[in-house]
Image 1 (tube, rainbow, N blue to C red):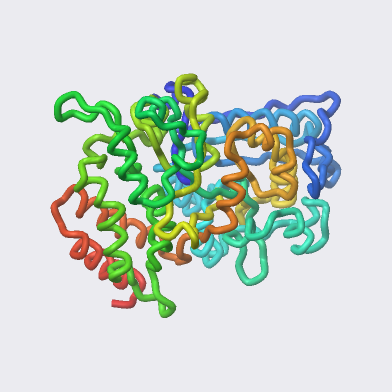
Image 2: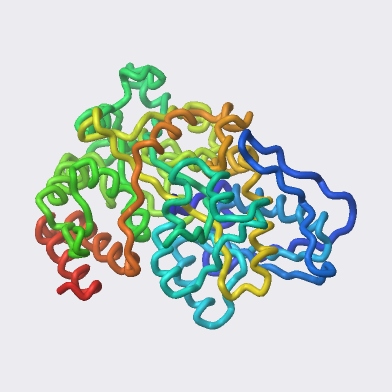
Length: 455
C-alpha cells in the first residue's frame, strides 16, 4: 500500500531529511538462512563475488519504522556473513520519496536497491532505469524459475514484455478494519460476520451509529477516507470502488473516462456521500504524512480501509491493537467482489555497478516471509507465506488472502503520476472547493487527455 506509517513519533521530526544506516562490516559466523515456507528457496547468506572484492550497496526505502528496523536486522545478518559487502539503508517519507528518487537518478546518483510502487514500472521500464531480475541470485536460471517462487499475479505489476524487473516486498489488497470496542458501545459484536458491512450503504449506516458528538463537533468518527496526501493514497481507495461500479480511468484507446456516468455515480454515491451525510471529510481528518491512519490508531475513528501492513502502526496503543477486527472490503455487489492489488516492490537500478549482488540481498531479505509479517505486517507474495507460523498467527490473514483473488492493479501509464494528480485535484475540488462531482471529473478528464496527448 503507498502510505506513511509509524510507531515512533520521533520520525515526525525527521521528515525533511533521510535516515542513514550504515551496516557494519563484521566478521564471524553467519546466522544461517531464514526459515522459509513451503515452496520457497532457502538462500544461503553467503554470496561469493569475484575474489570477494568490496561491494557497496545503497538501499532506498520509504519510511516505515517497523519495516526499516526489520530490514536493518537482515542487513546486519547478511553483511556479517559477507564481510566484503556494505549496505546503507536510506529512508524517505512516501510523499517525498518519488520526487527525491527521480532527482537522484537524474543526477546520476541512483541507489542500487529501490523500493518502488508498481504503478511507476511503466515509466521506469520505458526509460530503461531498472535492471531485470537476475535469476541466478534467486537460485534459478530463467525468469520462469523466479516466477515459480511467487503466488499467482504477484509479479504481474512488476513485469514488461516477459521480463521481470522487480519482486514484491508487499503484495497487498485492502480490507475494512473495525474497532471492536466501538462496536460494543452500540450493541454490536464486531467478531460476528453478520455485523460486518457488506455494502457501502451498510458502511454508512453503521458509521452514523458509531460516531459520537459534542454538540456539532465530531469527537468519534465512524468512518473516513484518507485525505490530502499523495495521488496514490487517493487511488488505492477509489480504484476498487470505481471497478465495482464498472468504471475506469482510461478506455481501450487510452482516452480518459474518469468522467463517465459510472465514475460520476461512484464518486457521488460513495466518496462525496461521506461529506453530504456529515459522516466524515477532510475537515475532521487528521492529516499525517507519516501515519495516514492516525485517527484509527488513536482510537478516534471506528472503521478504516487499510492493508495487512496497518496493525504495526498502532501496536503501541493496546486499546486499539488488542481490539481490532478485519472484515472484507465493502462492495457495490457482494456477489461480484472487486478489490485492489498493489505491490510496493524491490528492484535494482540499471545504473548499479553490482546488480547481481543487489538481487542476491533482495532474495535473502524477501525469503524471510514470516519475519516480514511479524515485524511489518507485509505479505510479500512468496509461495508458502500463508503456511508460516507468523501468518497463521496474524489476525484476518485469510480475509486478505481471499481479497487478493478479486483484485486488480490500478491503470498502467507512463504518465500515471500526472494523471493521478489530476484525479486527486478533482476529488479535492468537489469535496473542498465547491465544484460539482461532474464538473471536477470533467476537468480531470480534460487534463489527463492533454497529458497523454489525446486532447
